[in-house]
Length: 203
Image 1: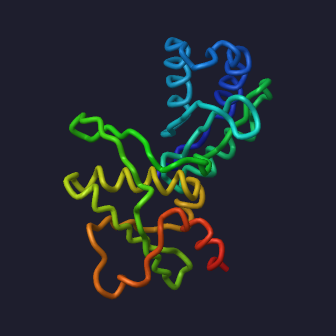
Image 2: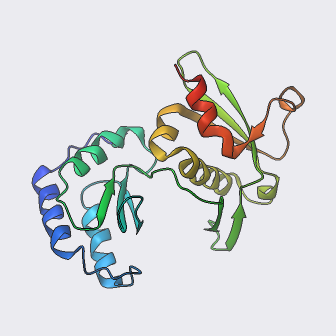
């Protein structure tokens, strides 16, 4: 848990800098020097991660993420609330859901680059009394990876399907298995369905 307060003056300085430089990243974000400065400036605000890429309603998007920590979510919301408008840019306080095929590249803790195809994964949701959920994910293709890599990959997939805000607010535990135990064999569904599943059962 990170209880350090945000520096509002530093946040406003960040957005002033970004508004002055947002047109200089290049159409393919090839300006590495500017990206390095962006990294320095965002990480100086707190323990956050970030992404730039194509936007949903505008050409470009900047995501300032709470790094999977629900305690940081209020801080990223506050940072985005202070944003200055920049033409053809939109901003997100957590990783939004993606429109994607669930295929991506992942670098393991040992430095190996591998392609992940999560489109065939199945899951089971378990609801707790406090309204939170555990998700059990069957990802046989990850069987040779260590537990840390499996966990990170599952979080990436769920962030892409659910959006990071929903994932950290509703999913309290993720278990990645090679096969479901017998009691869950006939209760699973494809991972692409989990967003609608959650919407239908959350009260």
